[in-house]
Length: 218
Length: 242
Ligand SMILES: Nc1ncnc2c1ncn2[C@@H]1O[C@H](COP(=O)(O)OP(=O)(O)OP(=O)(O)O)[C@@H](O)[C@H]1O
Ligand SMILES: [Mg+2]
Image (cartoon, rainbow over all chains, first blue to last red; front, side, top):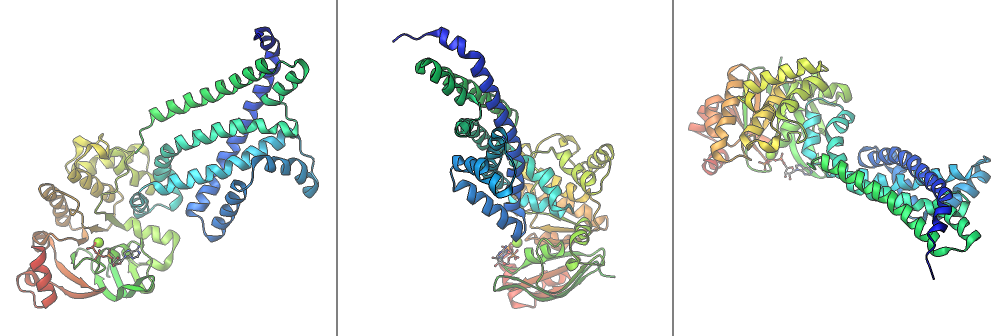
């Protein structure tokens, strides 16, 4: 068979549109995931028994179920349970938020607890409340340590957006699928789609490398 | 009025009693040297004073505030009782200057400028003005411990707690830390020092306390006790440390 570059050329606008949506879902999802992840991770590490139990249950439920089931639940079950209308895009972003949030919580918890406990005592001994000790002393140290693991999670979540093909979100994989269904050029289209993902994850890796280089791990 | 007052203080870890109904009053200006075998509860006693350990029985009043008062009150106690740790525990992401300025800035809430000025002053006091912009990893152990002392002093405490401040140091680096502590004592600072440095106890201490099994076994004048220990356990202990 021959590889038709013109097929890719023609598909480019649609694929770009899909890639844009993929980036949007990943960015919005990860921003929310970071928020929830920090909250849940800190609750696990430093919260009282109640907060700790809630965060623990959240993390275990999400880690114990496939993301595709989670998005199905949000898109099909939640509207019935809560009597609300949920758009596919919103369901996709919510799925990334709750899913990435659980994994990020574990990353946050681990890296905060990995900081030598003498530093926490030194901060407390100066007369600071715990939250300031975490914000000014432990946080900056923990943050350096979590960058590699966070980067990994960002890449995983970015690729997970391809699963939202099941709820009809027009992200990159879905766009590829639709173009292919019309022109039957599987080789060209899936090669192009793969390239798009590689470019996105490659850019992410590059940014993370640069951030990591700027900060010494202490 | 005593600056530190233990009233039948009991501290347990699980089932094990570490401090057993300890009574102890320390007056402002005293330099108390705390000695005793490993595991006798010296660190625990010190850490109860600034509420890094919670007490299980009795009461402990520091500068008029009970350690059981909780939250904000406990933070006030900690601001009045500076602590120096065996392992220094400097903040590794901050320079010496930033470490020392941290207390004035974040605890006392002073401006960036004022905090820096005080920090430089404190670093000068411990003889490290020329190391202000070094990170802890770029300083020797003795220098790190002096920065740690400056960091505690910068919060302007009334009382200083030292937990084996020279034990992690090579012998030739100890004297620089001990000299700083002696200078601090001569300024009139109230100090409670856990140490094995008997020369320091003799020269600087105004009171020597020997702990054993979570109780205060001997409490008296350092020179007298060290020259002529009556308590057989103290006698034995002293033979081992010197
Ligand atoms: N967080 C803790 N949990 C359980 N047991 C502890 C804890 N901290 C201290 N202990 C125990 O309490 C006892 C007294 O400890 P402490 O550190 O006060 O002794 P110390 O006199 O300072 O000894 P050293 O000279 O070795 O520093 C020890 O038996 C120790 O194992
Ligand atoms: Mg100790």
